[in-house]
Image (cartoon, rainbow, N blue to C red; front, side, top):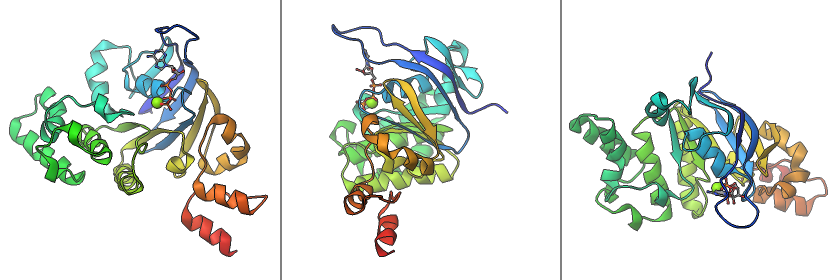
Length: 273
Ligand SMILES: Nc1ncnc2c1ncn2[C@@H]1O[C@H](COP(=O)(O)OP(=O)(O)OP(=O)(O)O)[C@@H](O)[C@H]1O
Ligand SMILES: [Mg+2]
């Protein structure tokens, strides 16, 4: 069967645009994402997360290796439109994504490009604004929104196109705890409906419920496995620049052999043991 998203030995070097040493590119990354998967890519600042997200979306093309979306190479011009509909990239900074004057126009933009009839566009935009709790902001310019509202708008503008996989580049960064919770649960809802999530972050807590993890270190795969196996590598988290769950850090202060806890519930049940 053809994978939804397949990376085969993907390497990429940034063109040297600044004086000084060139940033890390990516080296021989292999990854497979199937429909409905939740996959976490962990790595420090500068480890290559955003570069990898752009390669997965076809925004960058690999120097060697292949990125295949439902079997179609991102190099192949004739499938670019189809790939863009299948894979939705949520930028690290949502501002870089916005092109329209209002929340409604931003949400309609992708559908208009596909030539969908206006009545159908209106129906789907209304549905998306409801779902992402943006209805009361329909006429607001995107740059006036709060951080959490911007994130929800970037998700709504992709969701109207029904992507099969969402590439989420640090989707919870720079948000207050309330917005983090709201967006996390919206994303898990999409996942339950069958959208695959490829989630890039330095924070283990955000991807503790993933099916599969890959750790990037200086553009290379340092480790791959399931979240419960990650605890065996926890001693390397510091070197990898990965933030551990705050509850784990507290447990580590209380016990020389801290338990693998990622949530408050797990922490509390450990405390009572
Ligand atoms: N357009 C570019 N030109 C040259 N170097 C770049 C470019 N974009 C990124 N880099 C370099 O490539 C490396 C990987 O950057 P990337 O943005 O992919 O990392 P990241 O893991 O997303 O970091 P962050 O957590 O800060 O978002 C870094 O060393 C960065 O400086
Ligand atoms: Mg980044």
